[in-house]
Length: 255
Image (cartoon, rainbow, N blue to C red; front, side, top):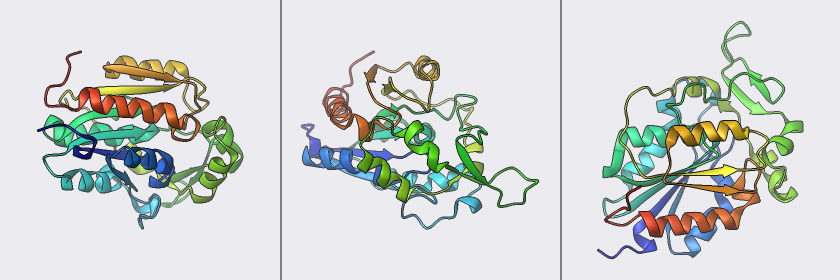
């Protein structure tokens, strides 16, 4: 079988409080290049009707991604791209499907679920919390403080994109993130990492910890904020396009 863009299927997974909408530029470029693209709204995100305060397990939160991957035909090369805490979804998908279904995973400034302490933590300076089970119980959902959104997430992005994001963000399920830890061994799948050099949300030391843990085949270092799908769109697209050609064939190059 000749590998072409049409036989390669990108599944784009967002981070906390975001949705499929954050990939609108990337999805457009990938589709224009001939790829199949599915951008996912995880539980309670985007236009998904779930309520973040009632989503208590990562399995429920991540089910839309698992359903999409399950439905992709066997003859298509599945390329998973996850941003920020969307890396949790990548790790869980690898555990569930392995190489049989997934050709390549790309962690975009993203945390692997099986790296201890990789969740958002408790930081009231950055997040607003909701306590759906009562004020004396742990928080059930969070959202970025409006005054912190551009500084932490979109400092190098256009004001149009950061304004759009501020209008469509939704609360994210804290309980689901806490439930995402995966201590089981997972099959090795070809892995790439995107390091955002001007990131205010994730320290450069944290990036290096994730890179060391994942041991990716390649690392793209890009001058971008925490949201390179906005601030470094062309560079990220070029990296994904070249990676699809290089790694998603019948015989993957050895590391």
